[in-house]
Length: 246
Image 1 (cartoon, rainbow, N blue to C red):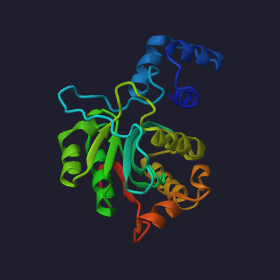
Image 2: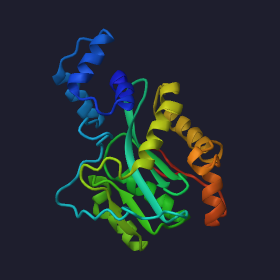
Image 3: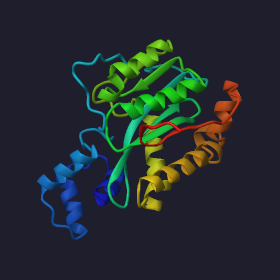
Image 4: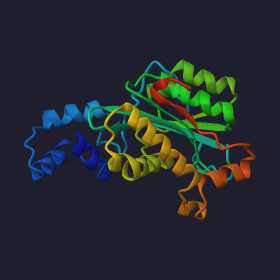
């Protein structure tokens, strides 16, 4: 699973056939059925160039994609959220964030050992305590189409936007964040357990928001861009390990 995660992050278009060849070159004789089982467990699917961790519930309401052609020119205009797989030395957890698209600022994050909707709704709740966007964009996964998640946004009078089916790059800025998190933090640290994972991610998101300059932001940090134009009063970043706020 560690090797599959490394290779998938580099080449998300790899399916079981190519992954089998890659593993064989590394000395691992694994059949495609086992690779398919492991990729399914990790939430990885080669059809789309992104992890498909959040599966759609066909009974839930799906909203249209509102960002096509939209000029995003200020903080709190559009927020987005997604889920990714985070490996540890033994086992894994899932990570979700709420990000401001304009500034790339991570407003809140949470980890969970399961893929239920609870940790996503708590991350959203923490972000909404700080501010409120005009539009909130996600994929069509069951966590984001759940009644509880939608109700929080509706009560805050936020317009809901969802990626088109099979449109892997509709949420491109969060996808880029996942790549940065994995290459700059997760793969370097090899977390031994959940507490060390939470501590490492907490330190990384502080670095990402407050110290890491972005070329697309004129080499400013997300902190500088978000707080400089939004008028926010502090640099609080919500941290919700395992779906429990603290």
